[in-house]
Amino acid sequence: MQIYHLPVMTKEVLYYLDCKPGKIYADCTLGGSGHAKAICEKIMPDGLLIGIDQDKDAIENAKNVLKTHQQNVRLFKGNFVHLSEFLSESNISKIDGILLDLGISLHQIESSGRGFSFRRAEPLDMRMDTESDTTAENLVNELDEKSLGKLFKNYGEERWAGNVARNIAKARKTARIRTSARLSEIVSASIPKKAQNRQKIHPATRVFMALRIAVNRELENLSLFMDGAAELLNPGGRICVLTFHSLEDRIVKQKFREFENGCICPPGFPICVCNKTKILRSLNKKVLRPDQEEILLNPMARSTKLRAAEKLREGHA
Image (cartoon, rainbow, N blue to C red; front, top):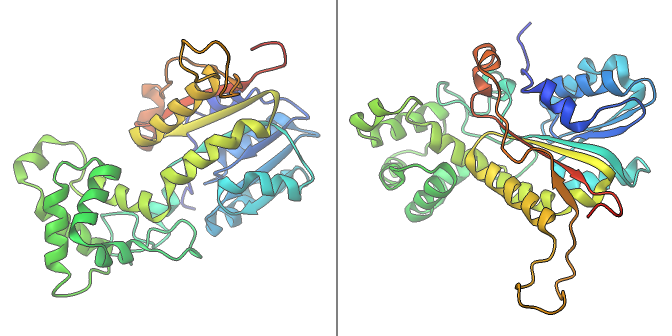
């Protein structure tokens, strides 16, 4: 049977979430449910796991992986931005830990058939939630050249974004771009061979990443979620976030810093008027990365960054 997905930095996740029997945790991005299963094993016999994923395949997989813990698991199909609503449905107001494992699963790349991989000839979809409206095909064929270039530059940090956008605009005049293989071909032809030879990744990597981020509104959803996540934690509760590229990590780092610093009034103000207080404290001042042994076993882990924070208890600000 094909491996659905390998969880990253599981030992570190369990440590920073402080998983203990009887506690309540939310795995907001189930993926292959590797982290969820590990959490369940730590919180038994009377703990509770809230499992969330917007990909219906992940929910079905979770039902199988977590079946031995089904009495202690509540599964919800949807985006993690709706965590508070899912908690309300479960008659829960506060929880002890939140996990976000961002990015894409091995299943989505290898088996979903949705065009996440530039190495396959699949429909250009890239939706994690197949019930959402916008696909990668929509963006590639309907955005104007300037907007495409901006998307590839801002979300993919692609140096040759202008070239790629120009060639896409030219190619779609002849025929609509419908498959991941066709898009990969156009992108690869848009980047000079010398530049390709200097980089370790496939020439289409950044463009495909940019489209996936845009289709699934990944950065907007992450920023929105981080704004309210701390309010859902019990005092002493933990939040652990695994990111896979600099744009995600920057958002998490900035949000943690914002909630750590509290007041944002100018230094000269005699009294605080912003009414912001310290909510979190970072548990790792320096971002954590997987060790070389894990990277050798799971190459998808190589770009992982882990940040964790704890909700402050009263009197510990």
